[in-house]
Image (cartoon, rainbow, N blue to C red; front, top):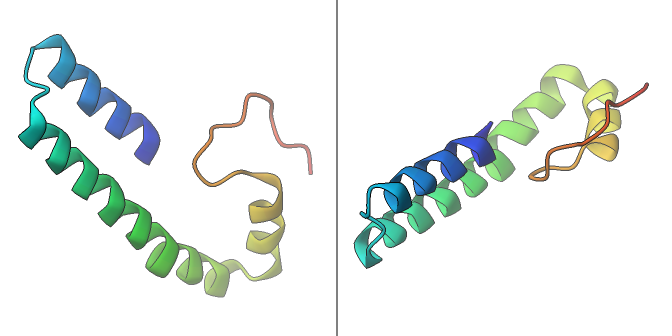
Length: 73
């Protein structure tokens, strides 16, 4: 979801000719902030909520790269 949002956001800037240094800097800061949020808050919270089930999910599903095939448990 995060990756799709940022790719769409950057694509709109390129299409409308607004991809200047300031826009790219804002995008970079947003990507870093999102990565830190996911790593430091979201993943530990999901780990506490779902325990071993979430650990198994993390082993089978990459963090930022979308899967091309379904995950068979």
